[in-house]
Image 1: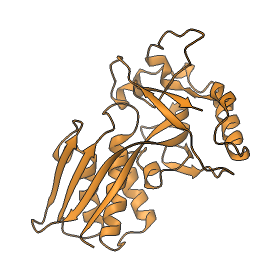
Image 2: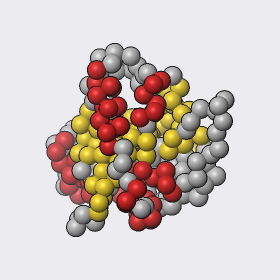
Image 3: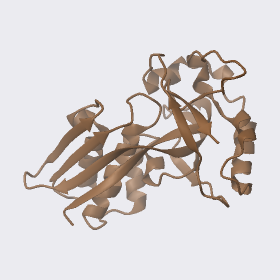
Length: 256
């Protein structure tokens, strides 16, 4: 095999509870993550130039080593003891700094794709190590399915359901300025965080037990501790409530 094409999906946080910062420099957290239909497209192809080449199309995104897909390719080749010789063509649809995890998804997709392209030289355990080196939200995208993320976000437990169909979501752009993820965490008032952990557990139980694809009554359990950083759009009785997708200002609504 010399070429492979893959889909690189975005995600939303149905819940996000943030805890204290540890000595490792990360915040403890728990979150129910759900992949969405919006996705980037990635083509990986072996080349004769003997280096990693990145071509980008669609929405603007970082170039060269500043791009997480490029970083993932270099890490993979080093770990697999393979001379870098791959061309990455990345078509971006997921907006930058939106909270949808596009960069992390691209990195994980490259790791999975290269492992397949080179006949699986690395175990899933090793791929997970590389994903964590890139970022704590990257491991989720190694197997993007409805899941509970815990610890620093890198411990992923898939949520097994009677009905595996996921609801569609409507994404709503925000005029709020996006903070970098690091700055967003530093800007939080931690005394206001972690107040809705019980709602996360309730939603987790409902998702596991209910055979329905989505029950609108569950919407009251959706929450995100980053809400304190962004102004919530004004609502009235005719306007459905919206929720933050992640650490960014973009919002979503469940299409029941």
